[in-house]
Image 1 (cartoon, rainbow, N blue to C red):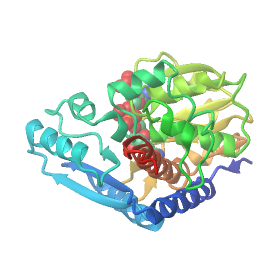
Image 2: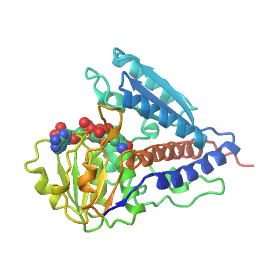
Image 3: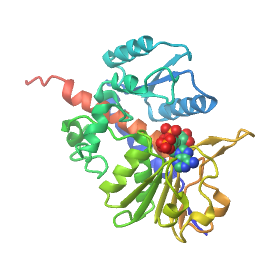
Image 4: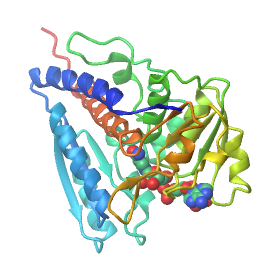
Length: 315
Ligand SMILES: NC(=O)c1ccc[n+]([C@@H]2O[C@H](COP(=O)([O-])OP(=O)(O)OC[C@H]3O[C@@H](n4cnc5c(N)ncnc54)[C@H](OP(=O)(O)O)[C@@H]3O)[C@@H](O)[C@H]2O)c1
C-alpha cells in the first residue's frame, strides 16, 4: 500500500515563511498585493478564486479581483492589465485559464509585465526558464537574506518566475524524499501551464523524461515504464492500476468535477494506490502547494520591487 503525498504540510511550511516575510515588509510600510483575473469562468474557477483569496488573507497578502463577463473584449482585458502593471500596490497577477476561446491567451499573458508574471506563463518568463536562466528558484538557491528578510540573490537576479503548479510538483516530490535524478519520469499532458514546464523541471533535475499527450501511441506502455508518473490531463480515471509499475510514484495534477459535485483527479485512486509507493490525493495533493507557491512568488516580486525601485539615500 502506498504512502499518501499530501500537499497540506508542505503548503503550511511555505505559507508560514511567506507570512513572516510579508510581516517584515509590513514593518517597512510595504504591502504585498496579488491581482486575480477571471474572464467568464466555471464553477471550479470560482472555487479556485475563493480559495486563493482566503489563503492570501491568512498570510497577509492583499488581493484585488478583476472579473469580466465571457463577452469581454481583448481590448478591455489588456487595458486592465496595463493598469495592473502600473499599480504599485499589486506585485503579481494571476489570470485564470482557460478563458473565452475568441481571446488569444498568449496576448493576455504577454501583456503582464514579467516582474508581475507570478505564474511564469508569459513568453519572457517561459524563455528564461527554458534557457535555464531562472533555475535558481528550482534549486532553492535563494541566496543571502538581508536583515529585513529580503532575499538578495533572487532580488538581484533577472526576473522570471517559475509556473506554480509544476514547481509545486517538484517541491512535493522533494519534500517526500523522492529521488528524481536518474529516474524515468512520464508526464501526461503537454500544456504550457503544466505538462511542458513540468517535463523541463524534471529534466533539469536529471530525470529521463517522456511526455505523452492525446496522440501518444500506447499510453499504458509508456506509463508502465515510469518510476515517476505525473498526470495533468483533466480526464478522470485515465491512469489505472494495470498501467503502473510496482513501487512507482504517482502525482495526480488533474482536477475534475464529478456529476455529484465532488473532485477527482486523472488517476483511478482505488486501483493505483495499492501499486504505488507514493500517491497524491485529489483534493489536498498538488493544489495546496500550487497556491502556496503563487503566494511565495508574489512575495518575491514585492521583495524585488523594494530592492530595485527604492532609491538608496546615503546619509
Ligand atoms: N492541481 C493544480 O494546482 C492544478 C493547476 C493547474 C491545472 N490543474 C488541472 O490539471 C489538468 C490539466 O490542466 P492544463 O491546464 O494542463 O489542461 P490543458 O491545457 O487542457 O492540457 C491537457 C493536456 O492533457 C492532454 N490530454 C488530454 N486527454 C488526454 C488523453 N486521453 N491522453 C493523453 N493526454 C491527454 C492534452 O493533450 P493534447 O495536447 O494532445 O491535446 C493536453 O496536453 C486539468 O484537470 C486542470 O484542472 C491542476
